[in-house]
Length: 269
Length: 342
Image (tube, each protein chain N blue to C red):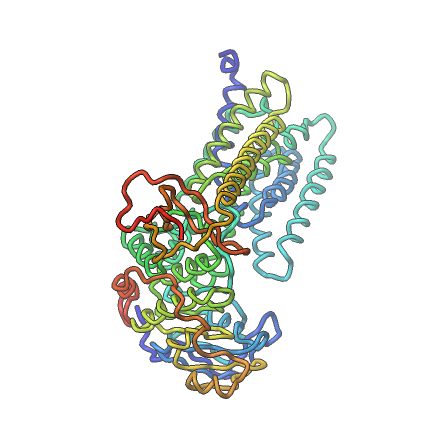
């Protein structure tokens, strides 16, 4: 079920941190459903903590933090959230295939006991196709390049068919071609109605997709407005296409599939 | 077979079969979670349970199970609070568990058989029919839970932060895994002993992770290896008169060394072959591309170029591009073959 709140994210006088130490203090922010927002800031500004507060990974120390219409700790169906962590590789100690890693994205939608069924397998296949790795489905993720492993993490988030997709530095350490391809995926996700919240210190080609910028500086929001405005008023952020956007990236092999993967806003589970 | 004529060996072999199958099925999640020593810690705690069982004249297996499960839950709660690292919590379990066990056993009345070695290192002759029934029940329960929750346990073991963010019940799943480990420790204490149980959980998984391509494959392979080394080790210990636990673990380590050596040899051979292929075209006079005049031939996940009847695969490295030899052309590859080098 989708909430009736018009806001995907709502912070009122929110302070977020770890243990008792606030990293982000007295922040007000509202993100409406369907918006594509860049959360910008330099290292240590608190932008990642802000996102982690929304995900329940950092502690809300004061104020209100609501996500998808419910206080962050009380959102029952967290499977509606997609999350791409800031992690450079996927591979764990034991080998796992692309399919196995991406299938994890479906689990939160299936409760504690229900096994993944045919519909889940279709969703996994479509999410992997959306990031251009359909032909690598049965390969161990450890055999993929760093950029490809990041795409696996994006596919894992897409497989959940999320209403709100939160990404932490998705372009860090990724070549220009992969950044461009990620921008294409996000354009489709956004067009399908998914709310995007992308934490980054460099938008690169994602600037073509993200329309609003929230700049976090020393734990407070110093700018909230059009992305272009952030580029002109905050010189240390790099908003705009990467140097070599024309370089061929990972193809959207099946754009129509990609569009179907991404459930329109307000659809059922 | 002579070995099967004895009731105690029949029971020992059955117990080792259960242990060999179950220990790696749980251990593989610990390897993935990089908590390989959790089994060791819970083995130490189980010793305190055994001692309580001996002192109170209750079944040591039942008391060990209770102690290990309580220890398992406790360690996960300590970890979840986040104020003490899993490492420190494990250390407290290690020392507290074994110290408690040794002190309590020393308080047992004189003449009461404590048989500490049998619990620490395994003793095949000590498995009773009653024990076997309990072990079978534990083994079936553990396998059923792994079958039911395996994907969730994998998810939490692989990326706990992601699992928490998307709402998987991380703490309950971690507690379930810890309880599975505790149960496996108790199941295994007669066969491999409390000090060696962790090895049977971890070493077959370590072998599997060297050769498997998927998690599922690694799980099945680890269970297969565990079963084989456990049953063969128990059989060997009968003939050699050595303790079953040590024999099984040495066998498992031998398998690990053998496979690790074979994998290293295979990789070294592949690297040598690759270098030789690279040397053939170290001074390749031009770069292959869509307009180089050599037909492109799809080959798996990449494109080769048909160059005078043999296939060139571009390979980018930090020092530039070179061409690997990917065999010869076996069928016509299309238009535009020039057969010459620009």
